[in-house]
Image (cartoon, rainbow, N blue to C red; front, side, top):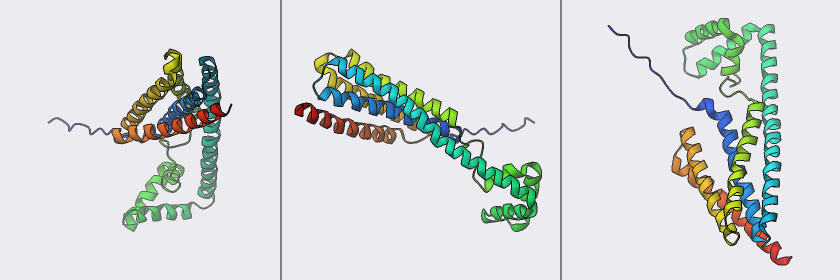
Length: 233
């Protein structure tokens, strides 16, 4: 008799850290750089000024994303480590109370008290800190904060996103520079939203529309500012 085929499941929660940073970076790269290009182009300046502004925005934005993401995620990692240090101390000083606490968590999740105590017994023998980190603090290997990974993903994805509207401003004829940057950026945003939604298992159309709408709004506002100040100058 053949053994039953092993049931395989594919979950997406292990993508949360890098996917969030990558999507945020790419989206910000496209939107901020395109908005900057549109605002400068709307002020009726030459291609050279537009390219300088876009390049400066790419470099500054990538560095800003890396620094901001690192600081933010590092703070989260330090908070998690502080909680784990406290949990280690409590497990050392009062393991019985920690056992009761863990069993009560399982009772609240639906286990009978006797079974909850048995589960807590076995998990604390196997990995007491891991059990408390996961079930009491909500910290697991899948969602643990990784500052370097998040900073690198944000900076790289921002740069990739920023290059796209910048290339459109290089390739488009000067009279068509403004509409070309807008059209290309909206297409890039729609594709990004669709890919990110598909990767994360969310509705593709809703993801594409959501990202495109906010990008279009940002470009509209900056184009109006550029036109206003360009007219004043």
